Image (tube, rainbow, N blue to C red; front, side):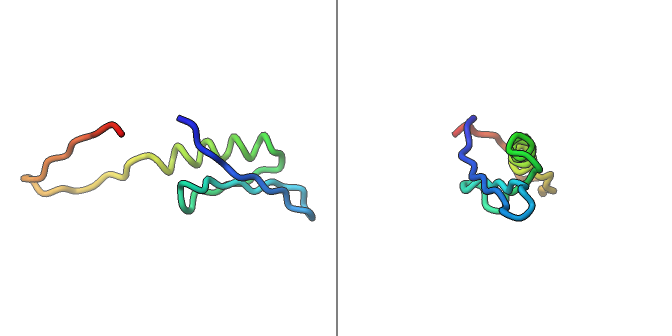
Length: 66
C-alpha cells in the first residue's frame, strides 16, 4: 500500500520531520531523509495496527477489505 508523506528539513539542525497527511497524528523524524522515511514507515505500520477491544459476548467481530 502506498501512502503520501511530507518531509521538511529543519534549517537549524538539519534534521528531517515527516508526516502522513491521510493519517492524523502520524509523524516521525530522522537525522537524514532516509532515516526519516524509514521511521515514518514504522510509524504508519504501528498507526494501522488495530487496538485490542473488549466486546460483550453477543457482539460479532468481522474484517472487511476496502
